Length: 282
Image (cartoon, rainbow, N blue to C red):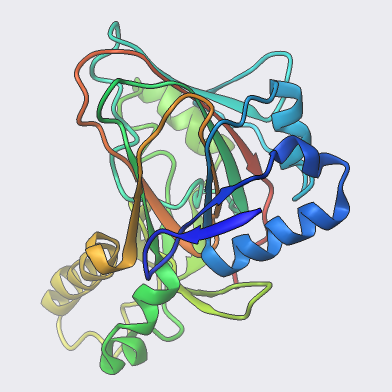
């Protein structure tokens, strides 16, 4: 196996390896897992495995989770089908910087995404290193967000375009989750900036230290949140991957954000993702 880093921030392409071989090879899987912790997102080409093998490989990391909005493959629970088609040109909910499913109390620890069909050009995916984003914050911002917590909502994102009753039912099933603004990686101990497009507001910002008058609260909290979310946009923290059929990305959802670039004309883009159950951020 050859490992080629793609940027100074994160991401490495693996060649000379078949992920299906890691299903029963403990040594190979341990090597891939260690590389994932080091590079945060791994990329591979020409991974022509079956859906069953896709699921079996992802399950080496842990149990898989379904998605309440995106459709799953009926024969392979946990394998979410992210299918875009020319018939649904406005189905564009992915083009925002996000960490998967932070509206869950325990967001996924990572994902294994395979390209089934993609546009001839366009439709790349980008990832950002949110450990580096935290490390590079000014010290006074680090002090200000120490101990700060925030809400994450499926209702305000996936549910926004739904009819009222369906949206409220979705929120009843998945109430807004509250997470630390800076989470600690449970394996590496690194501190990660943990706000994204699912984050709606801080829950403990309105304190005498932050708010002199009401105007401080109405402007100060949202402005700080927008500043923190904007850190994923910095190119020095990013890597960009051009898809081909049977290309695969494996990412650590605890330390990254990603963005599916919607720059392609109406055409098919079919991706299949296995999300691995994670733990409650702390």
